[in-house]
Length: 239
Ligand code: ADP
Image (cartoon, rainbow, N blue to C red; front, side):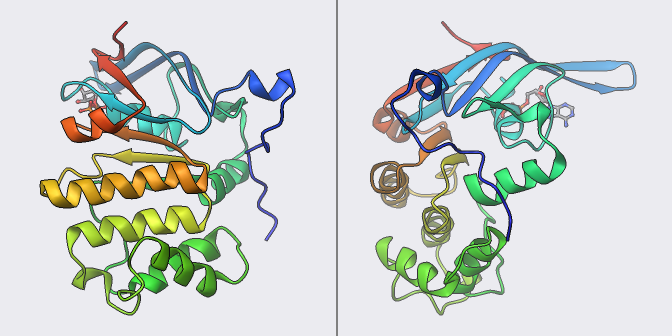
């Protein structure tokens, strides 16, 4: 499949080093519904370096999910620019955006990341096929084993525990070698023990697979484990 990655292999030239994995420049997002305007982001500036694991914190309604949907290219800013590895998402053709989401990006939601009627193995395999990867079934098996799910591959996703389901989603990101992983409250429905296991899986994505990981969270445990905390309030970064 001819899907081109947006990601440029890192090298040491000044040209590539100057770009972060994810950058927001003076981003505004205004939702309009009739006469009602809601300003979700107001002049957001941030930069996440390639290979970082950052936590995004802030009270409900401060714009965290809006930030993730703009970074995923699922919505467009009202003003300002969102860049991934230096490429402005607003300037991409629809096909390039699709390729970005299929190849470079993985999103881990709080739950319901998987097709419930498919096995864990099939879930990871489908994700790899969408990205146009060869030997998908083999790579899926390897990734599941790497995340301690080698014995769970044949089980239906709906039969797995919440923590296991989250780890299958993370294994799928690893199998695809997703360069940017956006996680929206990935441990929000888990007890502390499972939260730690899922957090370790996200850390492994960064450490062993080289992904850049951005985690929106309310969890103190996750925030404490992040390399950096970005705090949002009222649609912008608290400085
Ligand atoms: P958080 O994830 O930090 O809780 P959100 O990004 O979901 O915050 O929302 C920020 C603000 O934007 C909130 O006031 C929310 O009600 C509003 N908002 C988010 N999405 C929409 C939408 N599709 N339409 C209208 N308002 C929205």
